Amino acid sequence: MKKSFKKALQVVVREAEELLSTVRPDALKSFLEKLQNEWRTSRLFFWARGRSFLMLKGFAMRLMHMGYEVHLVGEPDCPSIAAGDVLILASGSGGTASVLLFAQKAKEIGASVAAVVGKPQSRAAGIADCVIEFLPQEAPQSIQLSSGGGGTRFEHALMLLFDSVVLVMIQERREEAYREMMTRHANLE
Image (cartoon, rainbow, N blue to C red):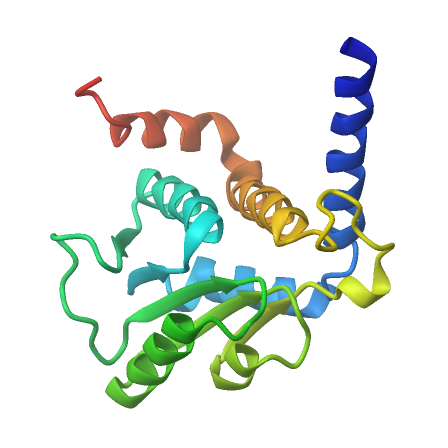
């Protein structure tokens, strides 16, 4: 039992790392620059479906801890999106119907759209202003699920990507940033 868990863990970590290694550095640099500069004072809206949305919610929470104004689409307290706002999306397929619908609507309103997608040249990537693409064809085939990964590898890589983005954003002032973040951390626990 213990040996099989350790092997499974190694597969999960290796596959996430392999997929993360396919992200283009220039796309990641552009996303980070926009997040730290252009979008710093914008309202950030987040949308995905399924487990991808869980990963995106964790990222939104960290940004809220860092002082960003964040909103989760679909929550009762989510305001309407407006020109100048940013919609951050995640989709393994890049073709999730609601992701495409909301991306198009946000663009029509005048908001910027950022997308993290698990397939290159997807429909979501075609709509977005800023795109981070995982390139699964450049990584070894996933063996996590019999369906070729079934999104699992994408979701793991997504979480690690977002946590790494946060670490990059605070690295130069880590102790000060941590203290600031703790002032916004939930205290009704």
